[in-house]
Length: 193
Image (cartoon, rainbow, N blue to C red; front, side, top):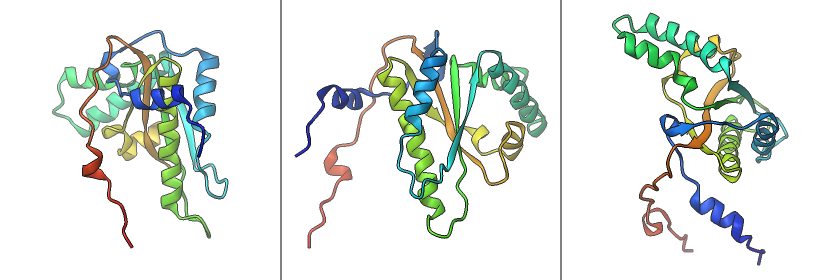
């Protein structure tokens, strides 16, 4: 039997997403961001393909990217209100730090693309868990920007790349409330021979 690490188990049991609008600063510093990204890379990666990469949005870069998002939003939704366009301009500034997890899954002779996509998802989850372990709040979101071709182009994704999501990191403005979790009896079955 393995050795239980109570602090690690407590950490995993208490992880909770915090909405970006409920985050405040300060965000992680440069060394802390490096730690977050280092932990994010420590995931299963069949074939050592590194089927993911990251784009870090911090400081004024959040608003510079937001200008592109607002322009795309305005172009595709000509009936958008000024308030909606302004929200898009500030979308990536809702938290002190946003890290986009980019899936680089591609056809491979031995490793299915699905496994590569799962690795990108695991990377995003490691990022969220590492933020929690470091005392930060985090939320992994996709929203419309993860699925829009113009946004992918504007933010520098290649033709075979997709956003696995955007991880918002900051500090909780107030203690987060937990949501109801599923009962194990509703989600677990035991295979019987």
